[in-house]
Amino acid sequence: MYTGEYENFIGRRDVVQFTDPANPAAYRGISVVVNSDVKVKTFGWALGLDWRLPANFAVNGSVSSDEIRDVPNNFRSSFNAPKYRTVLGLSNSGFGPKNLMGFNINWRWQDKVDFEGDFASGTLNPIHTVDFALLYRLPSIKSQLKLGANNLFNQYYTNAIGNPSIGDYTMWRILLIYCKP
Image (cartoon, rainbow, N blue to C red):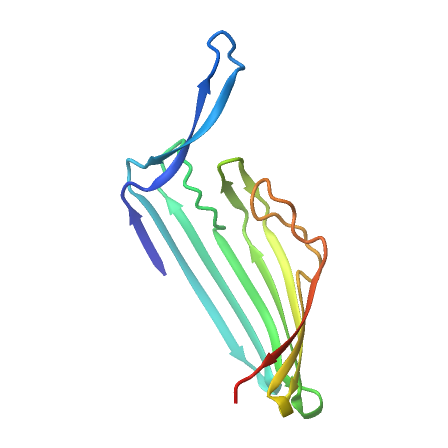
């Protein structure tokens, strides 16, 4: 859990400068750095659980939250964090012949984000993704072979207004991980 209170919190305000008094459509927008005249407060928390089960299975989960309060009107804090995030997972650290195989699967979710940026602001939709990995231990070389995929089901999402979507393909990786003796 954390809390923060900021005096003179740095943010931005958008200002319109008219470039031709005779033509109201002739203007340019400017983003100006300003300090808040009131105290801005942030707070957050996290809770996690890791439950070991028989036969080398485990269930894990976490939920966390971040918030900002008392931001003045027409003031852009750029506090681009979802209010809530979760991770739920299931894993097995040893099954099959000689318990050399393993797996883990995680479902990640984050709440919508009211995104504030210099070039654009708006709401980002909630994100749901699934990550998956198969593991094979190589005891003779004290290593592990891992085949994994991020965003297994190709869920498209955007992490900032104006950015391209993520999720055009599933990222599969094969890793050889050396474990120290």
